[in-house]
Image (cartoon, rainbow, N blue to C red):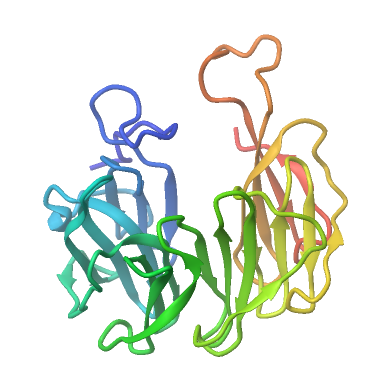
Length: 301
């Protein structure tokens, strides 16, 4: 099958029409990639020939994709059926070699009342799964063996409020944890056993986005047009020269310690925009020095 026949997701997970939507494109290597959406009803597609053909693996079997990650030659998918009032049922952590679609559930004991929390972070054979439970803090399941065994730790994020969790090595993890009013910025240097609060000197909105490029460097989207950079593990932060004249940052990511990409969205529809009540125009930006400066917008047409 050629490219996935799925609309882009604007937030609902179902896109426009009857086809399930996608909002993420991710490649584990030049040949093996995934197009998916973790919103309810989202699609999941895989390619193993560099994007020439795509297929829909059957492991979801009517469930929702809740979190996804790749590392050490494996793809990991947290799946389940979740309801806002009753939590999640039939939740499982599935694993497959990235070179094929041989999905099978891992032997994971989920804590009582578990629902997706701060997500899934993978770095090589190390992975962390943060789940909201009946406890005040989320439960953090950690593995150093690609999911063969897990230990139970405490996540820095509050149960029921989500968050994002990212790993830059086997030891260092970064987290942004909403609190209901503002967000907390956290970092661990021992694989998630202990966490330290980081301060930028200004309050962080719950929508703050964090993009670590190494164990010590990260870019933080702390406001509508503001980018901050740390190169000392979050001890200090500097304002990054901002190329935006209108809009706000919606995503930042790094492929290595130097090369990164950012996506911005306009704050309002410009004159002549054909969808005044639909998705706003977005732009792509690039950095080649770890986020110190950004250039663009990059032409993708």
